[in-house]
Image 1 (cartoon, one colour):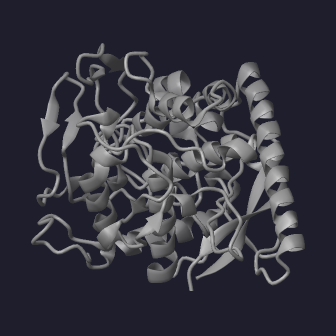
Image 2 (cartoon, one colour):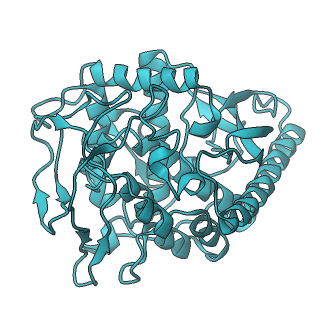
Image 3 (cartoon, rainbow, N blue to C red):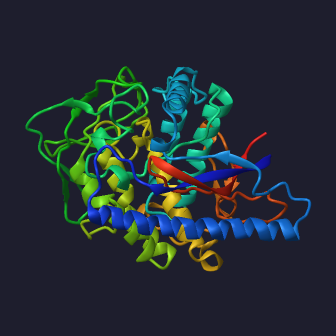
Length: 414
C-alpha cells in the first residue's frame, strides 16, 4: 500500500448562481480562515515528518487532487458520473443468498450500509467508518471503472439558499442529476426517534423521479428500511429484497438553510470542544429539534432513498455529502491536533441501544463485500507515523472561482 498527497483548493473569491446573503458570505470567510489554519497545520506535520523520517515517501510534492463539485470542470464532473454509472453496471460481489436484491457493484456499498447502520450512527465510530466507506467507494470508481480523478464533495453552505439551481442539482449533463419531478400539495415529513419530540421537515420543490441529468434513468434496487413519507407515514422493510424503482428527490432549500448553511458549519466547528459534543451536534442531539449538518445534507436532497437513513447510499450524492462531512471533521481535528488527533467517544450501538462497549481506536472497521477492510479506527485518524503507513485524510473548501492550493496526504492503494 502506498501513500499519496491530496491537494485541497481554498477559494479567494465567490461565483455562485444564487448570491449568498451577507451573513452567508461572512460565515464563508470564517470557514475559509479555519480551513486555511487546518491546512497550515497539516503542512507543518508533513514538514516534521520529512525531517524525522528521511526515508518516508510522504512529501508535500506527492499530490493528488480532491475538490468540491463546483470547482472541477464539466468534463471532470462527467467523468465522475460516468464512473458511477459504470459501477452500477458491474456485477455485485455480495451473494444474493445474503442480500437477494443486489444487482450491481454499486449495490454492494448500499447493502453494507444497510447491514451496519445501527452500529455506525450515533456511535463512537460514526466519523471514521464513513471516512473509510467514502474512500473505498472512490477506490472502486478509480480501480474498477477507470475514473482518473478523486472523490469530489458538496459544500452544502455555498448553495443553501437555492440548492436545486446549484451545479450539483441543476439537471445538466455535468450535474449529479436534477431535482425530482414536482409533486404539489405535499405535507412535511415527520422524523421520529423514540420518545423524543417529532421533527417536522418542510417538503421540497420536487418529490418525484429525477427527470434530467446522468441519473434520470437510474434504478434503485434495495430498500426501503425506514422511509418517511410526506403524509406522515413510514414505509418499512428489510431493505435487502429486490425492489427496482426510480431515483426520487425532493430538494429543499428550507432544510438546507435551517440545518446545513454556512453558519451551521462554522458553529459546529467552533462551538464544540470535544469529540462527543462535536459528533452529536453534527448528527443532531436527540430532543434538541436539530438534525445537524449530517441530517441537513441528507434531507436537503430528500426523496427515496436519501430520506432513508439505512439506504441513503443508494442516492449518488451521498458520497459528495460525506466528503463534506469529512472536511468538517478534518478542520475540527486540525484546529487542536494534539488533543483531537485520536479523539473518540461513544459506544458501538445507536445511542447505546442496546447497551454496548465503548468504541476504541483499536476497533476494526470492515466493509466486507464493499471492500477495503479490515482497518482499525486508529488508522483512520489524522496521524503520520510508521513511515507514513497511517492514513492522513485532507480536505478543503472552495467556491467556483479564484483558487489557491494547499497540499495534504491521502492513502492510495497499489
